[in-house]
Image (tube, helix red, strand yellow):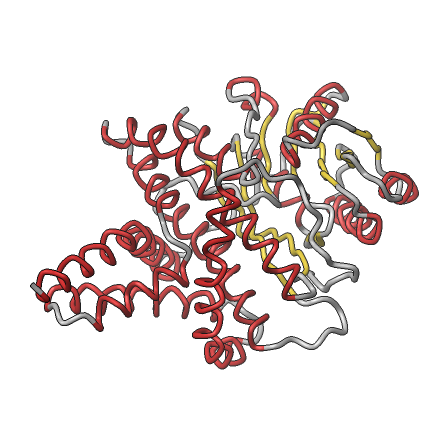
Length: 402
């Protein structure tokens, strides 16, 4: 009887974590491929069309000026005058619009019932930019810093024919702020999700994903696949739609957009529960949508389905340790393989840091972070069951993202 209980527990741990570790195995393989066969960077410079940088903003008065200036500096470095910056002030009750105008951005004020959150701001921004003659749109969050080569790298990738792009998206501490081990671990996890996974998928010819910040879409693509996402995880929702329509999001490793860490644990927990809850909500709708092309042998849809079904990394690792701890031979082998994949994945994320040694030392805080994630699980499930409003994450200071 007890043996049956152990076998059932092992089956649950394996079933829950298998999509994650299968996806991570692909991602790790893709990153190894990049090391063995580095991708050559094209020198293509023929940039046609007007590029619209769309910045959705909700009560971002403290940061919006910094973000606009960052994009403007990148546009200046690119040497192109074919760039326009649009700030979409969505349901703002502060001075976001005034601050954006002072920074010399074009401002579009949108006021609605707020139910569609950021996605409503993006739709308004795309429509307005298209009306201004833009042939492609780059999305930058209102609390971000872009690299100086950001605009030129995105323009070059579009000039090579890409319909959709995603660049490196990282988090960093605000200027002058001390960085705790827990915060460093969060930055490591964020880099794994938004850099290691994206570039690994791209190396295998898969769609790298859309991460909500630092992505680009052609106007012609939006005509074929309209931006109809309405959940808090609008980036994941739209990426699923693109993959099911046969589109590929290309990776731009040369460019980077950086956002600051949430400054308090409460702000981070709120952000985490909204993101993960929104992602869980998308699973219920995206799973069946991706399953059909996946069953027909569409490899990009297969990988996207694995990504959608994946547990958060910390919970997946907890499942792997549980598999090792159970007195079931095959479960222990499975768990050890998963922990090996996890180790390679974390090593890749850490080595991309400017301070890899500190990233490794921060792993000492991992057990506490996993426990905190487990404690947030009820809140995440609760968020998944309702439509979540767009809530600003507290970041009051500029961050060094260049």
